[in-house]
Length: 511
Image 1: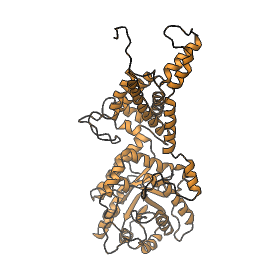
Image 2: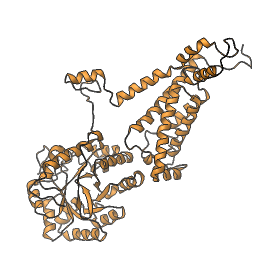
Image 3: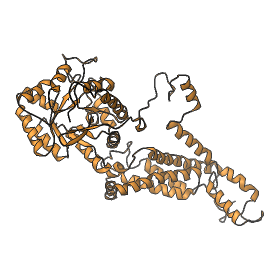
Image 4: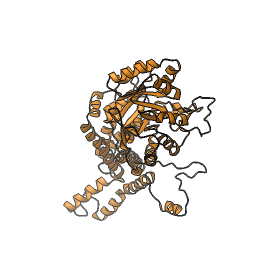
């Protein structure tokens, strides 16, 4: 019969359950911290800038000040690492649990799934008040209340050993276990170390651990697959370590522009995927604000300094400049409600560095005999101090503008060969954008202005190895290409090789 003086103790299975809870949360937090540490350019800026609840003003202030943000990011990353490590090893579990609660509480306050609040664009999952952060907070409250330090935990044992070393006590001293047991207790308490070893092994496997079996298979000429399956293949894309160099630049008017320009159709959801009706929705779902920021940052690291897109994407471009400190330039196609003048005004207002008349709009205006409207748009762009261009899908549009005496600072004209299966000239339905590439190359070669060639891959129908070389060999000064983040390094390497091969060509390089 327990008396009121008898201390309450947990059963062994209860302590074991608490230890599993502690180690599981520690594993998660430790990996979150290490993953952020291993991600080049990781920052919490986008997450903080999307805050809409308590302390949102403070979070926005942090995101807007790069020096403060760097400190916060370091505290965030190393806080996760140290708290996770302490929980896995069972060292100072109560302090680690309380610190983890504080971190997770900040995450929750910054982006709570509350009724009436707008959804955070960088959140994950579907939640109503309770999300994974809140669940882990409650779990860490249990760990803090019952740290289970006497079972698979280093803290109690290390402190006990230090106390004995500082002040030896007789074996029969009340309240202390016999000294002969201390080593056994330490070994038992260090059971978290194998878990940590398993964690390290799992991280190495996920991040590219080169196993003995993999080396043997490669030596035998066998492709090593990460997944044992008859059809599912592993996927590896190039990283910055594989980059062959920076994209060279030239000038369009007063603007210094990379020879490879990033197109915005894949970001905006205009995939031009022929009869694949789900593609537009798919690319929109993939390109969250955070993913766009990461993609633009990677492009800049590869030397791509210009993003050509519709003014509808100005919001995310401005957010990238403001929150991430991005420097990428924005060329606007001024496509807005089929009203090119309104599109120019909007583009200037949202910070475009250059503007041109959207190809589809210019085609329609030229076909309808309204080339003077294109001229008015050029004048308006120039009055705002920006380089002014004309876009076109149809060669006839360029010819009509030249005949009317229009002289833009640059042309944005489609160019691709037609040697792919869906290039049906008799049925132009989101499947072909340059029906006469030879005539286009010949006519454009005689023009003195810079030429940005776009649709050079025919919306994914042509491999970059072919498309880039074809466009540059046939006179393009710049190529505009839509790219996912996992394509950027490979595309830049291909473009560098194509540029090196086409230094000498029939049309002189403009600028």
